[in-house]
Image (tube, rainbow, N blue to C red; front, side, top):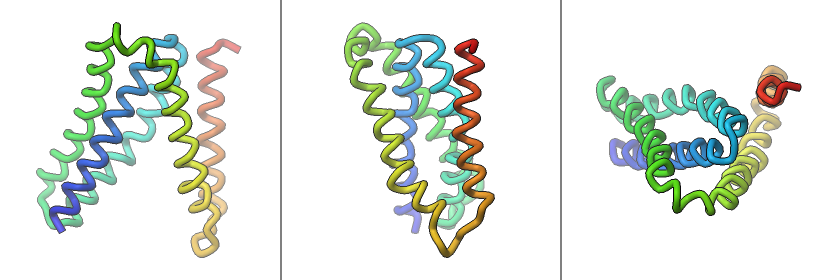
Length: 149
């Protein structure tokens, strides 16, 4: 149903807005932390865009509407970055709370939704577990590369 697609895009837009807030807040902490968070967010933007387009297409909308949906969620990320940039003097004190909150939400989603899905018996595929491990290893390797050690 088209209304469900718009609701999903609205939810994804809110999610991506806070992705942008997380990226900008991380850069306020340090360039290295900002770069790691940016790379993490960037890596999940591609599947997020496919999700948005798939939802819109499944609701019977056109390819043009699907492309607009991906533009909207991308713009929401930029909106989050710009919000922090414009309110930097007021946001700096909140960074102490924003990044741990963002990390906690990420860990919660991973622990409560993603990891159980990887281990779901009906869809048991060792490749999925390897991909999850590769993602963790990639993030650790990027950390070592950026940190210089």
